[in-house]
Image (cartoon, rainbow, N blue to C red):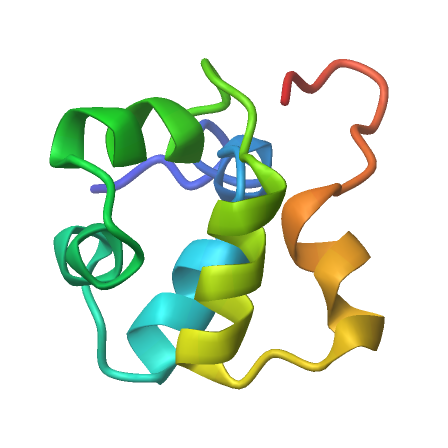
Length: 87
């Protein structure tokens, strides 16, 4: 039997979970977005895991590729980190 108490809340602790959800809802995998914006898959992995910051050019290209309106950029690329979480 699966112990859901250990799983609960962990999804939101994943850096850029909303952005990754947007990729998937638009039918893209991380690697496809990396190719579309001109970065390598290693760089994409570092960005998505919060180990390297996004550049403004990358953010602009992702927004263009996924039709992300300006008022959603902050929520997707600059999420607030709640106490006990890491970005």
